[in-house]
Length: 80
Image (tube, rainbow, N blue to C red; front, side, top):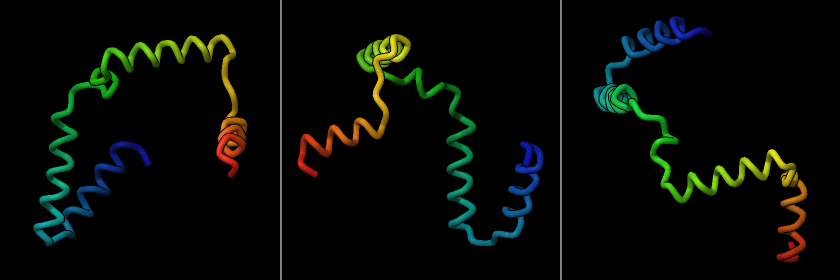
């Protein structure tokens, strides 16, 4: 489904809803999204941004472990 088809589908769904509570909830969700002009990444703290940048460098340098290995390490550490 492309964007225009999704919008058309939403219009049809909304047209068939008569419950004001649901309509108000949908309006609240959509109005919050339409007002949001910033990227979530812009809201990160400087400390978190620095740590994420360090993590990206580590990934580029091959300093990674798989999820499976991480879970095994946790299980061994906590005797799970």
